[in-house]
Image 1 (cartoon, rainbow, N blue to C red):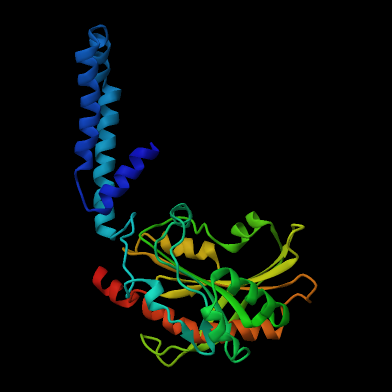
Image 2: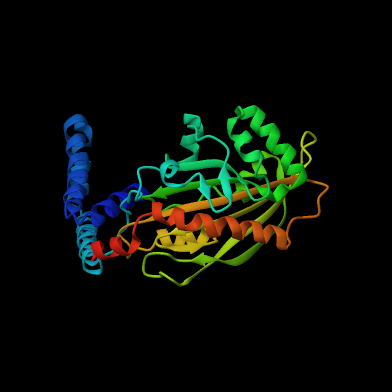
Length: 322
């Protein structure tokens, strides 16, 4: 039944009326195989095929299928979302290295194919950004270091001013109506961290500079999760903020994202996740105060306009779907 429902959904979404024929072919094909390869079963098979209850069941299935197809077409329902490309060739090219006072010091590199398969997308950005207003003399030097030396240098800077260093991840997904699997509450726990606190916060990350909301405040909510290290080898904490841009609007809740993706009235579907991480010593006071809020606001104000330019024009997609 599950397989049949998927087949029916795909056929209905494509506006096809072929699936009643598929049902008939499946039934008649199975009967033909039995009649040909199992002579001993020919008599019982003929009796089953001519039973009024069997014939009625087949008729009900066909009528139900035709009704579902007609209703789906009439109501413009879409069980399968069409993928939509980014407005740029890739996130790594579209997301700038310099955004406000934040400067990329790491280099964009392809991740391991197995890791990418788990990630579920080929559109991603994983970068280290440094606040050049705090470390103006260190940024050029950090860019020239090898990856291991840069990582060690960033750790030293984090020990002094942890909120001046951000690990940033931007990922993009489209053409699916599934659960949002990769959220920090799941991924970081698997890496030996434990959630110590979490909260939903809001900020006015500048104003929209294009689109239907041009000139209006960009009021966004984000989830802020505090993790504590549970291993003996590392004594650090992580403060992780994340939010989503799904089908033209911002969300902080992964369940809300899933709900948007599963709307049957929408022909297209996409979402991008923006995740910021601050690493700090475990001895620090939990970074839930104004300084962390200011850091997140500073980066989002500079970065969200740039990320929005990489994403599909949702209003244009909606117009196209009518």
